[in-house]
Amino acid sequence: MTEPADGSGQGKVDRLPGLESRLFDIPEDKFIEVVRLLERVRDHPDVRQTFAAIRPRLVQVRPGRRPTMKRVLCMPFEDVLESFSGVDVPLGRIERRVIEPVWRLVTECGDTALIDQLDRQVQETAPGNINALRNIGRRLWPMAALAIRSAVEQDGSRQMVWRLLHGDEELRRQVLDVAAFLDIGLTVEALKDALAPKPLPKLDDRHVEAIEQAAQAAARQSPTLVYYLLLVAASRMANPADLLTVLNDIDLGKARREQPVIFAQLSGLVVTNLEERSARLDGNGFGNGGGAAVAIAPEEAIAIAERLVASVNTTSAVMDFLAEPVYRERLDAVKAAVRTMVTGSVLDTAPQGILTAVAAPAANGRPVAVDDDAQSAAEDHARALRRCEGLADALGLHQPLKDAMASMEKGLLERAQALLAQYPRAAGDPDDAETAEINLFYALRLLEMVAGPARADRLRTAIMAATGEFGEG
Image (tube, rainbow, N blue to C red):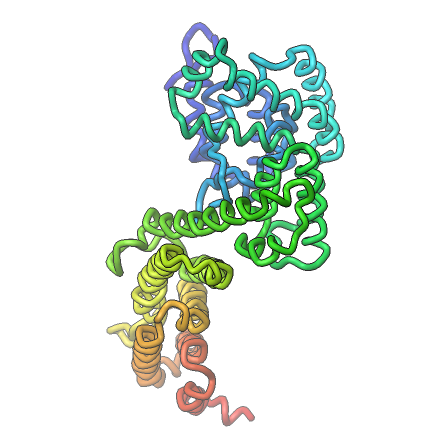
């Protein structure tokens, strides 16, 4: 779109959506510079749309972004905000579409004089000064929680809230959940420091003690708030089900009587969370069989599978004493979805991902140029294939994995032997000889990764004999 002749500048705003794709390609320093410029007018609808579109790169680059009141408001529940991509879903997640209506409720129904005062303080706060933002939150969060709850629950404003939330009951529930997180904002912030870095690989005694103290603090405000505090704790863990293994040993203080109910709520939520995470595998093209398109790299797929299987195993162990067949069936369905994903993204794609990196001999007898990117991708795929061994028991993949490994070993040997047979034709030209040798050793490396060094010994000996490596010794 061109800029209007009147020089109003409206054309610049119209072109913002086209800026989104270019922001993924520019150098990092320029990207950060553009982000900081956009943040000055971030309340414009097109700018908000641009930020939403480029969020994956924002997460990757993590520029020191200018603090805003809206960002301070979100701090107590940021750990349970839905992610933008991937299959990781925080426990009891809050959808990002909740943020705008929540902010409107706070600004329209809250203490406007306090909001203006705190906004001035935020504008004077340097990026990264988390203590200053928490001091602002100390006054913002209780006021915001009261404003939200009053607006949603009072008859006089119920119609306005209904219009703002488009009559969406799920959105209304999440808005009230946000109010609960804001009620315990300072306690949540202290717990986040104790459960760092995120994701926490495992719980130790000091982590459990921090959770217990935070839960007791939340219970002193209201026993119902302990559940929300524990959601934050679980969302900071690499395996949220780990919280269930220690929950019955934690003293919840004034919420002791509610402990069985809280445990049941969290247990059901952990299982539902696993189902949601496995359902996202369908969205990535893995859930409908081996013919589906692979949307993520094999090693990333294995990492996802390892996290999900670990969570299923931990949850299964905790659930065993509940003797609930429905939980077992639901967890088995999660494992079935993970198996389908691993089969489709790692096993079925191995021929294309690994074998094709070993170039077939050219018809003219000259070696094919080395493709380092293809070799790197093939090595990643080979590593993923070997990591499947650790999942074979849980997912019932022993035979499919055995078949895939045997097929890869046979295919790599055949291709390497073809390159070896062609090598004498290239040996006379130094450049061709070097290219041919690199191709041979790349093939050897893939065979070692897939089948192991011992099974690659014969090929290694043949290559060294053909290239004269023995003679140099």
